[in-house]
Image 1 (cartoon, rainbow, N blue to C red):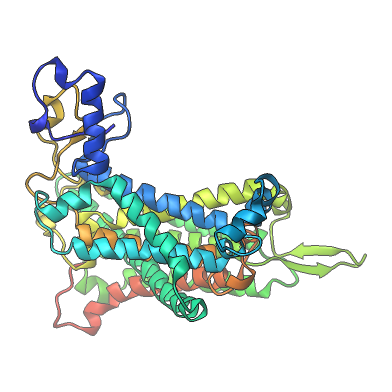
Image 2 (image 1 turned 120 degrees about the horizontal axis):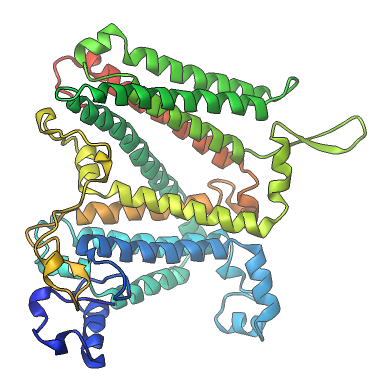
Length: 478
C-alpha cells in the first residue's frame, strides 16, 4: 500500500476508509513522488528512507533473478518443451531459432548493462542532494511505476546495440573493473567495522570495567572460530598424500592471521595507535577463514583413478558427494544465498556511517557511546508523526530535515553491484562455458577471486596498522 505525507491526509473517516481514497495513495506511490510502504495495512510502519531502498533493492533482485534464469540450461529446456510455438516466437522477436540470443553470458551482459545504466543515471541525477524536499529527491523517492518501465526499457534496449562483439569484449573489462571495486569497498568496510567495534567498546571501559570482559570474551570467541575453522579445513580438504595446493593455502592464510595479530599488539604499533588490539585482528582472522572456506568450496573437484580404475574425487569432504545429487535444489539455494549476500552488502554499504567511513570522516572518540549493538544505529530519529496517525499513511517521513543517507553513493554501490552480479553469474573469465547449474560445482576464476579478496583484506588491515609508522606526520583516524 502506498502513502502520502501525513499533512496531506484530510481529517475524518473518509481519510482512512473507502475504496476511492485507498486507490489515491497507491497512485501517489507508483506514479507520483510519495513513498511506499510494505504493501498492506497489517505491516508495521516503515521509514521513507528504508522504503525507498527497499524498492530499489526489489528492482535489483528482479534483474539478478532474471540473469540467473538466463544462465540456466534447465529453464531454457523447460521453456522449449512447454511453451507452444516456441521456435516461431523466437524467430518472430529475432532472438534466434531457439532464442539463443536471450540466454547465456552475452544476454546477461546486455541485461546488466541496462541495469548499470539505470543506476548510473540516478547516480548523476541525485548528486549533491542534501534536502529531501527538492525536486530531484522526489524523483528518487517515488515514481516507481515509471522507474520500472525505464529499467525494463534500458535492459531491453541493450539487445539492440550495434556491433555486439565489440560491445561485449569492451563491457567485459568494464564489468571486471567495477566488480573488483565493489569487492574492494566491501573489504574496506570490513576493516573499518573492526576498528569501529574496538573503538566503541573501548569507550565504555572508562565508566564500566565489564566492557573489558566483553572485549576479552568476544576476542577469544573469534580466535577460536578462526583456529577451529582452519583446523577443520585441514582435516576435510587435505589428505596425507596429495592436496599440496590446499595445504599451502591453509598454511599461508593461517600464518597471515598470526602475523597480523602479532603486528597489532607490537610495541611500535601500540605507541602510535593505543586502540589497536586483538579484537580487530580476531575479526579479520574470522573473515579470512570464511573467505578461505568459500574459496575451497568453489574450487573445481579433483578426480583421480584409484587402484580399481574407478574415478575418485580427492581433497573434498567425503560427505560432500551427496550434497550435489539434487542439482536443482543446490542451484536454487545457492542462487538465493548469492543474491541475499550481494544485497546485504549493498544495503550495509550505503548507510550514512559507511559512506562517511569511506570518505575518512569519523565521530570524535569522546562522542562514542558504547553499545552492544552499535552497528545497528537508526538512519534517523523517530519523529512525532510515528504515533500521530493511526490509520492511513504507513510511511514515517524521516527525511523532512535532510537526507539520512547519500542518494548518489547509494546508486553508485548498486551500479557496482550490477557489475559484480554480471561477472559472478557468468563465472568471471570462464564465461563461454558458464551456466548456473555448474556454477556451484566449482570454477578456477571464482576460486582465485576469493583467494585474492582474502589477501587484499589482510593487506588493507595491515596498512591501517603500519600507515602511521610510514607517514608519522599525517593524522590517521582509525
